[in-house]
Length: 400
Image (cartoon, rainbow, N blue to C red; front, side):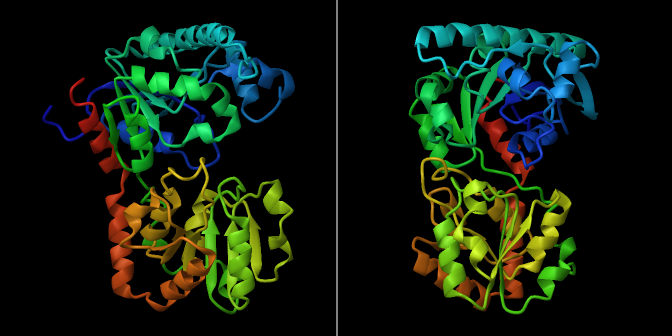
């Protein structure tokens, strides 16, 4: 294949995150990029009976109920050559099942129902010789390679799912199987690529993109008023405040040892964050959830951006997407040292201890310059979704 990127193909994407997800989504970004040169069907997860029973009127459930009841169409055009599908089926909630053969039997039945709904949409759209792209959906899409018969099946690893108890229960057995049986596996971090290679030699690192249109220097002259009026350096984090991923003790250590610095945390909190010592520290500021178009303005208000990760099974291999977002706006970045973050070692400040984190924040402040800003932006711009799709194309070149 001579082309640099996939063109003129029909692609079906399945995964964990629905199209109407409220947070940033790799899978959605990939779908949007692929739809520039291909026809793409983005499939939402099927409605589980448990969610219907206990969250009947919850966000997103009403839409899915209406599709199942034939009150609304499930296949929706969201952009040129890009559609999303709300499956018209209900599947069973099965992770509670402990007996392997029963779990597999019900899971296969779920997959059959799911595939039938997808096949209807494929037929309506006139898709042929599909490429199947599976975003970490190890259960509900386990049998889709056999049921949909794509010309190539791709398993995309962007999170170490087995670090979470829910996925670990059956995933320790199931995920290696779906990785092995896929034609190609691709991952957004070197750590996850090595993990996939244990089960499938056709596993490749395709990097990660950044929303360069949203996170750009056009916000250079924009500062959030309540932050701009604060005295002292402004150290900020933007993203979900999730205690399984972020180090609360490290953030508290920074705040207590740099009392004249402002530590600004932008994003929704989980319970542990909400009840943590951080709320008693006068120089820690919580802004709450902000809309995506406000996030660049907050980042631009910071003097240094941080990514204070915990090191555990969930985080150790994850690509730190927000580092690209910080760099795209030219900001100094201090982050916990991980294998995935190591690709940024020449452009950001990495720390292995709490004390190092303090020193690197000070260093980031003192070493900032117009040259460093330009270098950061250049690195972020190289991490585009276009480049990631080019790497994906190389990975599947023997199949298309």
